[in-house]
Image (cartoon, rainbow, N blue to C red; front, side):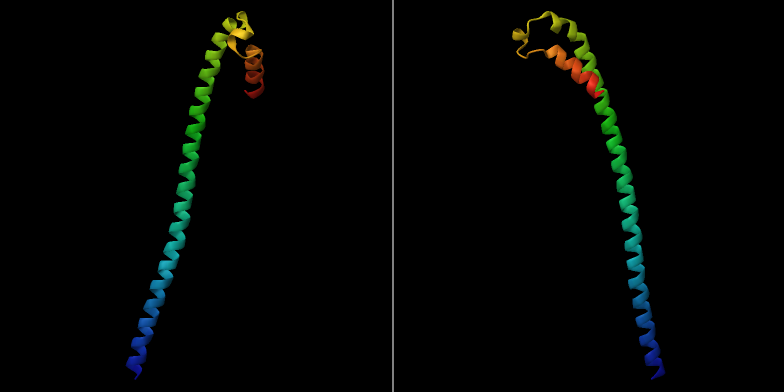
Length: 95
């Protein structure tokens, strides 16, 4: 009888150890995966922000080169009234 109870106690203890180990592993791995994912997303968004900044800078520089030619043309030819004023206002307001 004592041997049978001891065997049940060992089985129950082993089962509890396996369940608690699985729960602990799941909790730790979930936190680690979340941390790694957040770090990776921050790196990606930093690179995207840098690329977008470079692209916008290049576009503003290209618009700066065209600005003297746009000032010399008629607004009706361009199709937008005061395009140069809009470009200058937007550029200095949003940089």
